[in-house]
Length: 486
Image 1 (cartoon, rainbow, N blue to C red):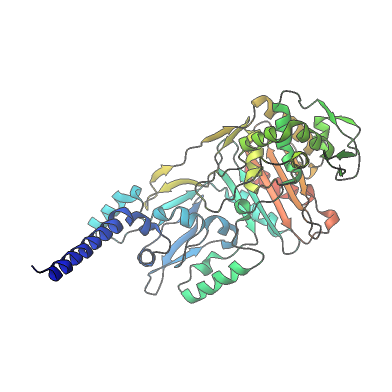
Image 2: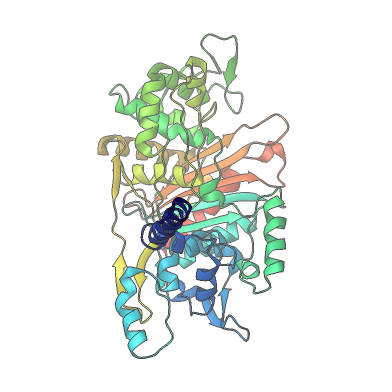
């Protein structure tokens, strides 16, 4: 063989080997990733021709597929779309979000746990069907959460999360403004693309689930973390005397920070319980300054800050407690300001941990995975994430929070005949925008069934009337009643 032919032959052989290696890589190494890639149009086209499984709340299908009269055979539909959109997300030709994305393999019928079902369908020559996903959501609690947000004045922005303290089950999750996922499920793909661009460009950010995707200063609700750190230090309890007064001078600064009402919290020395009842800024500024950044950060992280824990619903943002704050910033962190930010889910986890003797449970929204015949294939088991505080500290904090609802700033959450533990928060933002209103609670205080966090990011409420108790308290109360009275 002459040299030119030999060179060409070797080159062709190398090309052939390269093709073999590439085909092997794509079919065996990358196949699973490519199959699950939401941009994979072939997979989407196939799933459009298959009956996708339902997403269930109780016995109600809040998302299901129905026969359609076009080439795709099935149309995804959402019952009560605005109420549940932050949880279900949407299933479209272009992408998926929420539970539709996190549980896509089950809903599409491709999950390995549905192998037997697929095999039976193949042998019986039946059309394959997707599995069903049972959520942890309590329908009555979700109704109350959504109604509470809807009743806020004006074009409001806000979110609500309710947890079962002993398990981490998400009982309610609502966010406003929101969107209609039915429009994303349309088979008019041009309209879907236009809708996606319109909502993505909307300054109100309706596609964001504010319950888990928006982090803002938690204000005075963070005083639960500060009080926990103080009691865990061994130097304080609910009856300990702490600094009161009308102002706290930030260290290394001439700035004096006062209380929300301009008062003195009842004196220069008050009990920790009284400080919580009246939400005394001076007390918690002083405590955070005394404890220091390391102790405050360690306590915050035990509650879940600087991490994420929700595994079955995408879009969670980490709540932050920076470990590099200077002394003035650390003092301000004691009242939930400075660089501290939190999601409503995170603050619900703080309240739930106190209700659960100090144990932080991993939050979850998927309760069970079921075959098309509704047989249970898998069930989520509760998991403890950390021991945030001792049971003794939890008892001390509960005493303080019950007093805050009984005769403090959190009285709007009172429920006749039931002991409720709660805390208000009003977090300052920039000078040109109103503050954020927060509220956290759990009840019954002696046998907690539900922990709630409410964030009102904005509403048509006069600036001087914005307060966590006024805006968030009634919402938390309604959710609590819905859970307890079910």
